[in-house]
Amino acid sequence: MHSDHKQATWLFIFGLLSIAQYFIVFIEKYYLSELSPISFRPLAMILNAAVYFAFYKWVISVERLNDD
Image (cartoon, rainbow, N blue to C red; front, side):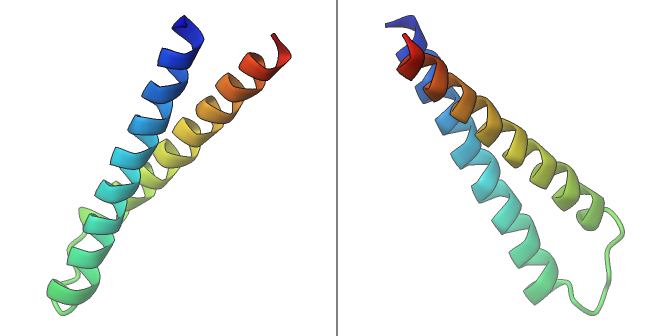
């Protein structure tokens, strides 16, 4: 039961970070394209790394659950 809760938590974090990343990229591309803000590009890259990490942790959690 604890593994299932951990698995759902990582999937939820993955979803939230993905939505935040898409929102940042959307704002940068369509609303702030002529301003070229310097803070959104590194933020999007950090969110991208966090999204991949959360997805990795979710996959590891699912694989451990399948091994048991």
